[in-house]
Amino acid sequence: MVGNLYDFKKDLDQKGVFFCFSGPLSQDLLVEIGSTLKQKMHLEEASNSTVIRVFSMVVEKAQNIIHYSAEKLPPDKSVAREAEMSLGIIAVGYDSGHYFVLCGNMMKNSQVEHLRKKLTGLAGMTKDELKKHYRKQRRKDPEQGSKGAGLGLIEMAKKASRPIEFDFKKVDGNYSFFSSRTFI
Amino acid sequence: MDNLIIEATRYTPAIYFDFKTDELYIKGESYAENVMEFYAPVISWIEEYMEYKHDRYIVLNLELFYFNSSSSKILLDIFDLFETAAVEGKNITINWIYDQDDDTAYEFGEEFKEDFNLVFFRLIQKEKKSG
Image (cartoon, rainbow over all chains, first blue to last red; front, side):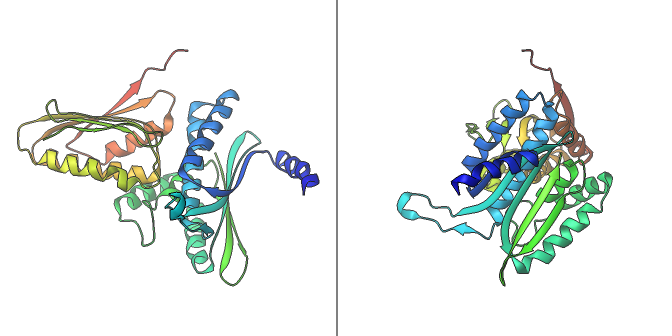
């Protein structure tokens, strides 16, 4: 494995990925990742508006992993860590003038169709339709099982410069791996 | 009624609600993992505050550098409380303060503004910091 790490890095470089994290994600870690990324983008002289957009994608995607990843570590009361931890992947890259944010996590097969339908719907909307949809959804109560306002995906679609790319890989009889990429 | 003062953290805003001067401030970042939990005391305070039937001129100053989508929903709930109070005759101004080069915050302000009639919703552009 140690011999392959450079290949892994080269592969990321080739794909334009300059940040990559895989493992248990927490709110505190998200704050650190966010502030490091902001610093990097400011050094690259990205506009403030771009930095905020990239940051917001990272927050929404990371919080989706924290809330919905099916791969979790159970809470451990003995070390005062009472919350369960969610695992997932977050990556940020730059390609042809645009930053992008990649994210992936495990999910139950039974929820795949619902999410696919939602994302397909969003991908087919114009900016104006997304804006209206967002305001309509914000007025509604979140759907069952939602741990936030249920607005994260719409907000990402609204802020993205092209439709959200997504993919579902069936892992076994119970789980699939969900990945998505959003361009700023 | 007591003032409501909550210190800012790296992902929750500072809350400074002054009962006597009727000036309310929300300032900072807003992207806690559980946004509802953070804002529950804020919403309770506003609900109780609005019960006082005096002829008040109330100002809410909002200066959020970043807020996540769950916070956006709660902001709408908070603005609804103010709109209801305005319908009941209170004079309310919401100042939406945003950075000059933050077009996302500006767009959010514009969108919120369209949702309210009786609350005086002002968009205020902050001067760009020099240096």
